[in-house]
Image (tube, rainbow, N blue to C red; front, side):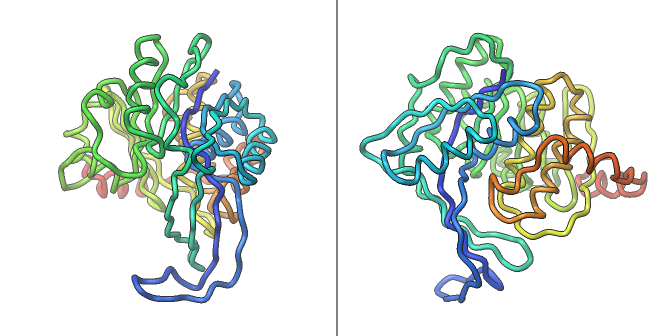
Length: 310
């Protein structure tokens, strides 16, 4: 079984020609709400990927937003463990999506800030714990420490970007970051390879957007070029990647195979609007990969060069 612990938000999404600059007003062309939150998105992605039962620990308020998020999670097959907050509303995110598919996001944590160390359930039977940073750092650290002590593999998606306390780093088995987050965690500028030298987590997965991904394990460094798609909305693409990656590892796939599935699912999530609404089913990812062209040696070498891998 897989346990995801993290945030739940209701996303308020406005589509516009472009994302406004500071102090600027831009007229939008459409507005919708979607269930979201990094933790919830990753739990849905893991459940839809299949192979192992996915549980999700989160905090929500006593309001009209919570039932919408809970229904989306359960519809995806997630086993939901909700800590109910009487003092804080369910978390919200305000998202502007441009015509090119890029987004700008502001999150109001609300009840997510109420998820505490003593809310962690018994970990017997779980093989992986997937965490993010939209809940308190002290809670994330406590969960990682408890999981490591009980032999559960700890996967941390260090987003939103922030420096990590040494105790947390010491209890993470797999770190998933984008390029900007990697630089913050490493506390060092330079290429992907330069930054990786300053990160002590055994296995690090770096997502590189439209370029692909790079992985460093204790034994090797390898890359996965991105799958080209028609981008509509990049919201939850990274969360989809994380959830599918852990689900694939949970069902026994090698890291290389899991990375390929996660990369495909993350790309497919960019083709639809919304967070959880855009996360593909396992069968659709399988069909996508069955028809995907193999990446050329040249594209692999170009990505290795970009990362500074020699």
